Image (cartoon, rainbow over all chains, first blue to last red; front, side, top):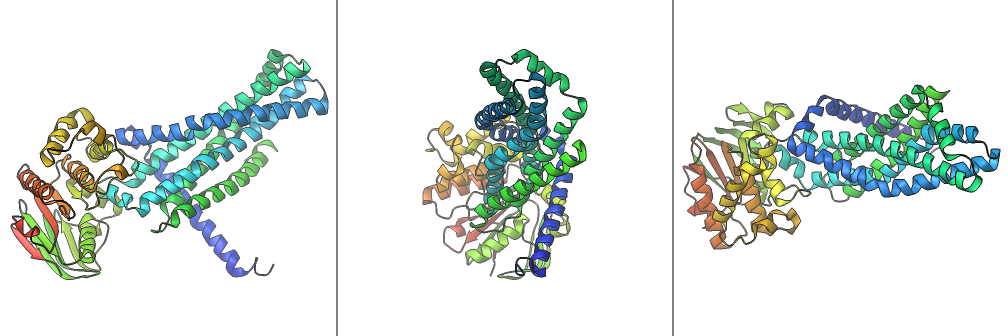
Length: 259
Length: 214
């Protein structure tokens, strides 16, 4: 216990978090200040590829998990409160739109894209490709990082919306088939309960998650030392830091917005 | 155009050199260690421990990184291993700097790329297949050809060739040298710097400035 909480260990952890936070905000500022780089042909190509890999290619796994989540949630609600269309709609909204949609989508994208982006950037650094870009007069931050941050963030937001819609539609659809609750009426209840506050909170949460996942993945890819063993280490570090940050942020946003 | 003043870095000690506009320079190095240091120094990612490196009358390493990167828009570099971007196909690699700096788009670049590749290697075969390959599927000669054409497309004022012919057969090496020497004269004031191993083939490069760096 003493070893685990030794001043040296705690100090090192705090230093790492501070270093990460500093790197995070440097990349965030660079990305926001250089979004115009997406107008360049090669940078736009990287941006579109990133959306394809992170957004489009994730749809299969996201659909599967969203359908099952929707079915499980509505089944649990019905088993707890019986056949009650209004309450089912309310609980679906609370669980899927507020919590599970953003969180599960973030976890899927961290598993698929965070490790891929971090290891790809680390490999490019180890193999001297970042220097090759510099000697062509191309800033790696503009060409590699800005489109990745924009592409991953946009994908997280779009895929989360897709997850939420799929889970709600299939969840209610399943319960209407098995328990006979009115499909259209329950769906209409969900839409009518959806306030602007709810939409904005979900938007803010997914935007934050997207930025965290994209910037953290790029940060760990770029800071990898010049060694082959650094490539898997960068991927692991990015995934772990992303998971910890996403859960922390989820709690923080939920507390700030919904309590 | 290039001025090294008493530069010391790693295995290089007190190197001074001046190359003016329009000149061809041959720098013969006795070892790869020295070549790697010299190449990294000229390519803008290895500051001298002592002395000063000036390109276009600008102290390269006194510049902040974004400005230094901007300066290299005027330079074409052909690394020995190609320096290609691994997730881009050969054609995308060739087009990258010219397209990025808005000098050429794909349609405008295509005739020149084809002409340069055919001149460098008349037996190059199916270019469509070659252009669709990722760098790890290319041979050493193909990688160097792609890097060469990529460096030439933006019409740089300074060209740096890193062991351009090493590891190639005599015929391919000769064609590459003849091509680069012809291209040197295509742009007024262009400087071409060849980093060469200490061998007989390197001696055939006609140069205005020839130095041995050790």
